[in-house]
Image (cartoon, rainbow, N blue to C red; front, side):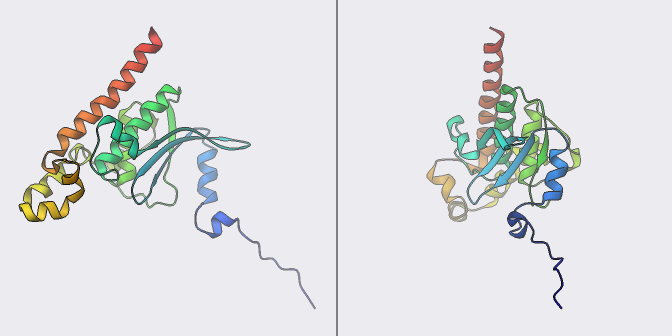
Amino acid sequence: MAHKSTFKVQFRRRREGKTNYKKRLALITSGLPRLVVRKSNRYIIAQVIEFTPRGDKTIVHVNSKQLEKFGWSASKKNLPGAYLTGLLAGVNAGQKNIEEAILDIGNSTPVHGSFWSAVLKGALDSGLKVSAGKEAMPTEERTEGKHIEQFAAKLGEKSYYGKFTGYAKKKVDAKNLSKLFNSVKEKILKQKKNRGQGKNA
């Protein structure tokens, strides 16, 4: 005698391991826009997304490749690049009158000091309010790339060009990366200041 099956087919994205719907529901019920952080093979992506009954609506989208227009010619997926991506996303969110958000790292493991926490630190430094513990944040030295500078300084000339071929092609000195970082950071924050003055004019 046949019996009715009690097996329930899960949503496709859950079957593929792309979406944790329990986690997503908790984020949506917060009532806040989501600061969504993702990483591809080449870039880091930071978005501010709002939930609507018709589906998610992207308010802000920043790809670390956009840092090039501010002069960032180093890696687009290291910690300094992640921080600057978060900083730019936070500045752009401010121009959209978004003052607070909740962090969404998808299925990534929340490792302290990783790329997503560098993005978060950048967003926080831009003025965007996001609930987070300070212990998760990378140090100032790491967000500036001091650890990269120290590693590069230990290498001989041959090893340096072997490890930092991409930097050499773009004439970026890995031994002085923090100088480039602070220059780009200043330009991004200047954009925030200029837009603020335009609103008050």
